[in-house]
Length: 129
Image (cartoon, rainbow, N blue to C red; front, side, top):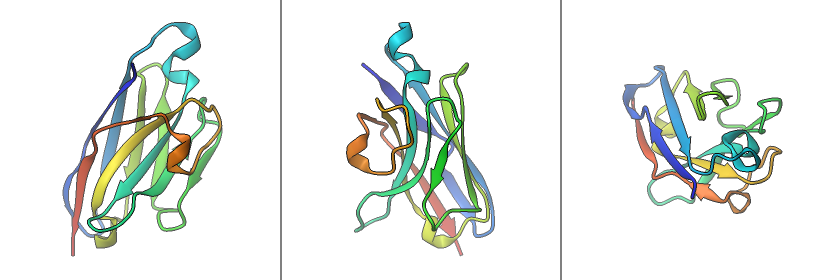
């Protein structure tokens, strides 16, 4: 099955930057390679529901962002490396959360959790004030 492993989380001061990575592994025959999936990033802060952060279509041609991160975060993917990235700049304390990578069998951009089939284990991002 598909496996997603996030990395790159950590502790950073407000105004700083982090780059999250999500490595995809699993089915590799042509119909179900990494490039067959759209990818997304979500986050969940303590006591809150998981919320959408960013998503990217199968070929990177379309992206979508939550209003709270628009202009500060950038999602990208490298289909040759089976990896999706989330560049986070101008971080704020309210960005503190566990960040999850997800893969959807839809090829278009998906912004809701129910549209995703596979999830990573999450990586902690903590932004200090």
